[in-house]
Length: 142
Image (tube, rainbow, N blue to C red; front, top):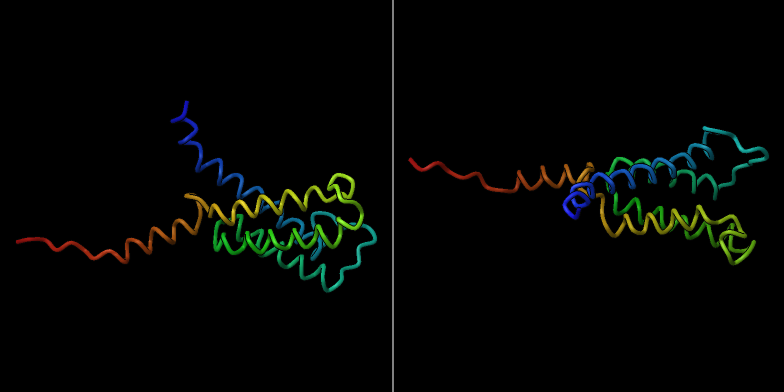
């Protein structure tokens, strides 16, 4: 059983990273472009536009696994700020203040920032390519 779960670990983590990145990206597209839906009564401020830029850029980078540690760290910080500015004043408990998504994103991205992009990512591809370039070629003995 352990070997099955070990083989599925890279795929499962990639799915975790991709889904959280895509969901986060959608919050940015909603705020910036009104897609996939335009919230009624929404009037963006400079702060929400900044948050939307972070959500769009970091969500995309996390999803594809590029500069993942930095993008996830920024996204985690943005969600912590969002929780304390927008939700915490409405109530301490995230369920009461409707801050559950902010808390989930914050800790998911904190995990990704510390774990890294995983094996199925552009970051891993770039590391592998860099490793091949830095190794000296073996000379053939004649």
